[in-house]
Image 1 (tube, rainbow, N blue to C red):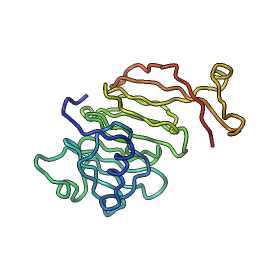
Image 2: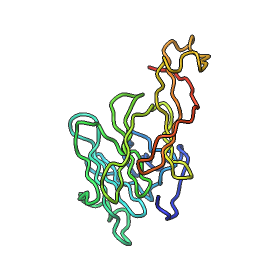
Image 3: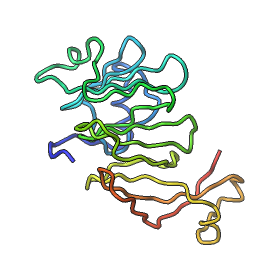
Image 4: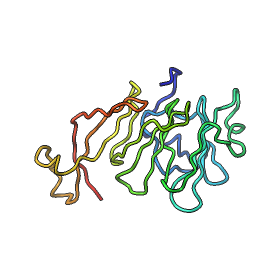
Length: 210
């Protein structure tokens, strides 16, 4: 992970920074908790946003047809202010994600890693982590979106994965099952980047399913 000092904020303030009406378009996916916060967010004329970080600039714009965003990542020029940095079309010299087949969304930056969320459903989605040094995906997994994805203080990635009912059944209580009717189980897991082995914590909870 980067040894440069970054500002980190809990989710409510991160949402304000990413979606402040005076600065930017509202983003469809809230950033991962604990990821780097941008120094500025500038609204783009095409309906997307330009996120200015200490060393990188992430430009997004909605796909014209279907769900998802085009995501370009560039290195930030030395001494360049946010408006200058975000002027015009970014080239995507570090990374370009443009395909419409995966419904991708910018999900946060934890230098040197870019987090990308993908999916069209509200509960079960995919998380991909790209190494901005190589431009390659170094980790990918499905996750339960009803619980936050988090970058821990030790730099590890924390999220929840659905636990099959047959595996959880009888072992874990779900007091609200009768009230909810439709419910499921998820387990918290931790992964060391890049591409480390997933560590199951055994911490399981139940939650409502749509």
